[in-house]
Amino acid sequence: MSAAYEIGINLTSAAIGAAVGLGWTYSANRFKYRHHRAFWRFLEKPTVFVVGGLEPGVLLGTLPDALEQVVGQEQDRQLIIDTIMAHLNTQEISGLMGRGELDAIVNLVAKFASLRLPAETRVLRPSQVGERRNQNLVLIGGNDANSLTNALAPRLGCRLASITNDEGHNVIRDSRHNVDYPVTWRPTANGATELVDYGILTRGRNPYNLESEVLLIAGAHGLGSLAAAEVSLSPKYKKRLYNDLKEYNGSFECLVRYKRVDGGPDDGQVTIDLEFSRGLDVPPHQP
Image 1 (cartoon, rainbow, N blue to C red):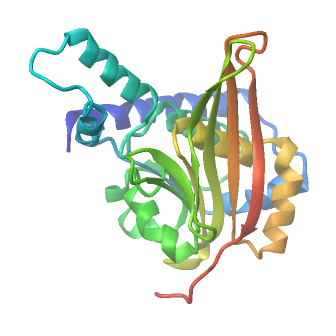
Image 2 (image 1 turned 90 degrees about the vertical axis):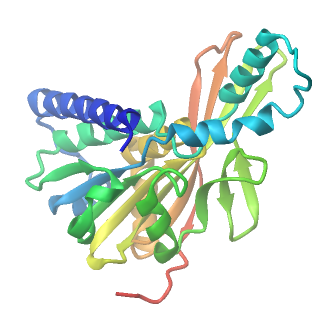
């Protein structure tokens, strides 16, 4: 296992430990509303957080395409650097767990700690899960970054997936309607830049053990993952998720939209919306 991976996991564990400590020290409140309690009731049983990996090699693997237009042997070094930076600024490459995923994990675990639930919660990488796969699972990261997500998503019946498209860009793909939701940067009339990212929030029965649950949180980029986590925790959406839970018999997926404005009079403004919810296409159970 690479040193970068180990460092990333250690930093993640430290951040989660700090969040849990703060939650247990300063928060004695439970969710006040039955809608939130119903959505998170599965946490009363042992739950495993499964975080995606860190594979820096994937980043370099996509770089030649970005440099394809840089021709010749005596290119200006700054031109190459600028091309690389532009590539990095428009791409959070498959296989990398970004800051958004880390923030999503910390926010979730801190909130769960405030519930004072009796069950044990662990944070593991996919290769460490083993027999704990039969427990409740909270999967952080899409098909390209989390191998357990890649294995379970088809068995859950997911039709929304975080993937890398043919152009090498991360998108949320809706395979039911053959539509991609890419990350976009758009200049506005007042000189600002509008960033839009998309995330997935999925809830369903654990295919390894139908008595357990799976919650999947993923994004095209990290901000999409963070937005999906925020929707799951926000009082604004507690009734919506509760109704989805009932309507779709506990198995549904949501598309979440994240928008941030950089610059201009609305600099720093963030909007998170739940675009739509629908039931999963759950296949026949395979033990």
